[in-house]
Image (cartoon, rainbow, N blue to C red; front, side, top):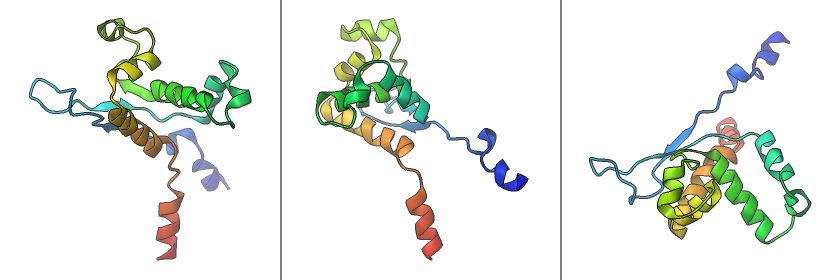
Length: 135
């Protein structure tokens, strides 16, 4: 029984941050794309965002609220660049991490960030485990 419990302890279920090139436009001194870093979110992070406004009542519905929630989740997940840095926000003429994402990224770059977020936070790995079990 203790062995089974150990599998659920936080130190045994660590999830690593993901580094990904969202765009070739952001380059380092050598001209290589600068990687964005995303951290995995918890269900508690999502609940916190839902509780922050009236989004909880509308999350299941279609439209603007889902887009607002997605934007908030993306902003909360991004570690690098620091979307809260005043200098970065000032350079794009916006205030707030979410508005910065919208100003910084083209639609395709935003989609690349969404895909990276989804691979880090929405893929539970069960499909891969099921495939391994079948073979």
